[in-house]
Image (cartoon, rainbow, N blue to C red):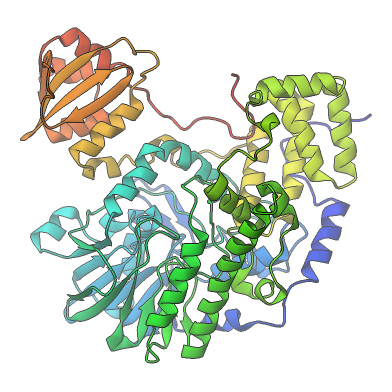
Length: 640
């Protein structure tokens, strides 16, 4: 059988994909055009220069690269996703209501500006400092220059605080006692998500949000939550004020904020707030114009769909009839009491239906994969645009609910201890008659439009031999067709990014996944930094190292115990313990060592670190720290 000739270019939509797109489009509620009216409401202006650059002149966000969305939807994009991309391409400064404004689509999230008595209170300052600074420039240009008098982080996701130092420096915030408000547990969950597994998540982020893809009808068209993710530097001005529970009220620059705890659904640390003086409420990210993720493809703990639904219901109950606009961390606001309650009720019922139906089927013995294959939303929920699976999907969300309750094991002992992918792949390929024959079978499936089966077959070939050119090419073509068909932006971006990876055409110039969290490490507490060192420590290689060392970081004292391949820190020696070494350094040097930007031997030789006692053991410890580059593949497995 003639196999496709390897080529680095993208493929056209196949006849099967064209038929799918036509059939899918016919199921959508195109009569409802209200979002196209609301997305324009309150528009004031946008930047004249549509390119936002960093201090070195590198482009971190191009607001003009979505111009292609003005055309009709091509067959290489799902029409529902194309519609959302068109809505998300509307960028600029908007008035929400009296004294509340938003800068939308300068990044993946919205930055909200509340005009206080003497200055601006900034809510959720975007993903990177460059886009946040550009957004603030637009505010100053059209609303006037005023000082920053408060900053509010609605939750502990990077796109809602990463631009903070583009708004105000840490030193200025401290000097002027500017309140920086965040929910209880903010720092803990920021570190857990962005530092401990941050490099792996950042690599998957590149796929999920299409950072490695060109912006065009065969590449990235939207991040679903917004125009796209900027590639600038993410920072953090640490919180000074923590909101610990429901009903807490805070006055910031003369404006009353009434907070509602909203933690444990979309984010472990999150709040909503109401501004009663302005008849407005902020719903953070528990509500948006899409079905959200119970499990996010970038990787994070599975979320609680039941709590999510109940939290929305509580928010509905808390809303007074005087609240006539609801704004969020993504997308455009909802205006009108009845419209707000309808919107929130539809999203509440969507998450509750997913949860309860999944549990009902679980208790009939269905597995996560089986539930995902059979469950559909009721028509009323499914035909509501804000419930469409444009970000999360019903498929991967119900699998997540299954995982939350029953874990990864489906109960079939055949799946209890399977071979790792490369070993299983070799066995599958051998059983099916060898690589060439499996590729022929995959080509047949591809030609018939059964892309899921083609990708399954090719997955095993590439696990057995990831360097097989015909398999790499055919899998890349297969992923492209599945990406073209996907309604979910993250699904599309994952498929198309994997196709690039297989072809070796992955874009360069974006920030490395290994840079994830490098700026956040600078504001971490010493104990959290020591936990991070434990993650970097190669305990498998240095399991024989036994060491207790006194550590002085500035005026802080800790004892670091290394034993059985683990690192443990405490404020004092335990019973029977004795220190064998001592090391003393400044906080900045310690941060540099934790980051990997400062090397141990160099810091000792230049007297940045004072070390005595069992220096050889200290050397073994500091040279046993892994460096995480984020340069690993996702479409082909490791050899195990």
